Image 1 (cartoon, rainbow, N blue to C red):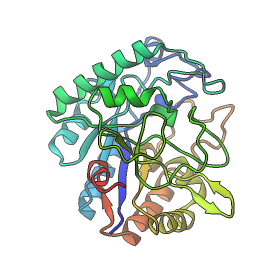
Image 2: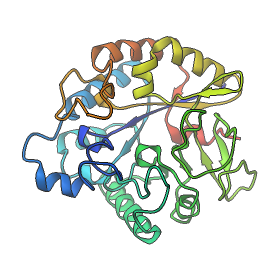
Image 3: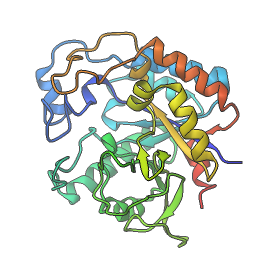
Length: 300
């Protein structure tokens, strides 16, 4: 039976690209943010605990993609995650996008990216006392050159590729990337080699020759329950897939810098509206959810 890998990206409000970590951010990275920000920064613990309680009530084991520099800053939340049975996966050291989002030219060397990759892996494995085998790129900005470095450093799967007809966050030139999990070679192509690892791409809704974006989070808040119900049903006909959410998506709080100048609708429909839709989605696809590491075992 085809499955849906349920994943949670543990980003706080200041990790959004408009605030830090991207070529167009207000702050270059989280270090710069914390040097300048003197107010409250933790807006994620309460909704994340709410998310954990919801998943426990449904008996769902998920994958939590964690930014490693959060381990020391969020002790209560990290302790709860450590005590849980959810999979822990890698979401970078500082949530920094290593290339210009428009030109795809490097803003961080590959050598430095690998150093941070390993530092974050070590932090997560030491704290959670379990092997880290999964990776998701910050903002889903994924590049072909990352693939051999992930394989070299004992990662078993990635879940960053967000193919659709609207935008392209990666430098992959391949058209019609599968929306189901698949074994991937160093060019991002479908492979049958046993030494290649797995990609668990974001699903998209196919209407004629158009691929409309999916995955979850903002698009789940924007398009809603019925859109994702249709998208996931369509995708499950051909194989297993994924869904992701941020705890902030179900938060009712107003975040600092919420009314971003360039993306005024970025936080549309967050809070109880999205929580209600999420509960409906969990109930409709009941018994089909699993963590990422279980799904990778079933990929073609």
